[in-house]
Amino acid sequence: MADGDRLPGPLKAVVEELARLPGLGPKSALRVGLTLLKWPRERSSDLGRKIVELREKLCLCERCAGLSEASPCDLCDDPRRDPTQLCLVTEWDSVLVLEESGQFKGTYLVLGGLLNPLDGVQPASLEFARLRDRLAQGQVQELILALGSTLEAETTASYIKNLLAADFPHIILTRLAQGIPLGSEVKYIDRETLKQSLKYRQNL
Image (cartoon, rainbow, N blue to C red; front, side):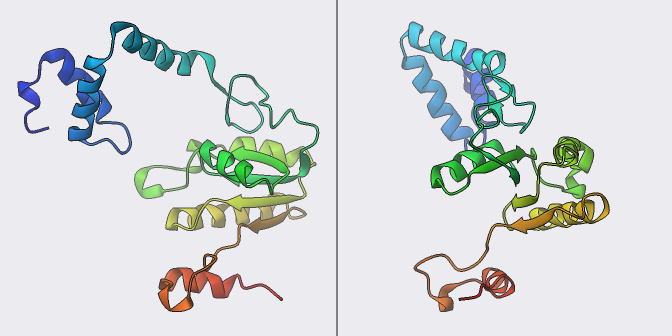
């Protein structure tokens, strides 16, 4: 921040921490910091307690590695979920989006990121050991990849494909359909999306 040295020490410290959050630049962080100063002391103290409680009261589910107040989480503990289908997502918020669709009735596993050797994200950094354990239990018949369509997602998908071919060849590997969004015209679709649409075309 260009004028960071002019800020009072306590405000500067808060603004610097806020600026580390995704989507908050120095200017936005300063606005948030100034807003917090305008709050009543009780409200700002309550926010501080809730931030601490994020770490104290939330845990990772022992089965899916998703955020929960208890382990196993409600989804993993639900007997109505289909244990033969396991959907692999990158982060926990993807579970929320998939659940909002109301279409998937299987189970989940949160990988915790995507493989990116250039940034030092190796298989040991992610939840592949947990994935192996789930697959080795023998219930999963289909592993569904919901990782996105980035280069890192493709690298991760390739790694998982090789893993299944070597150790779990009986498990079907699928991925979410990729292609032209509903309501779009072909002439406005970018080349990579069109490529994926052709590659994963469906029968009518």
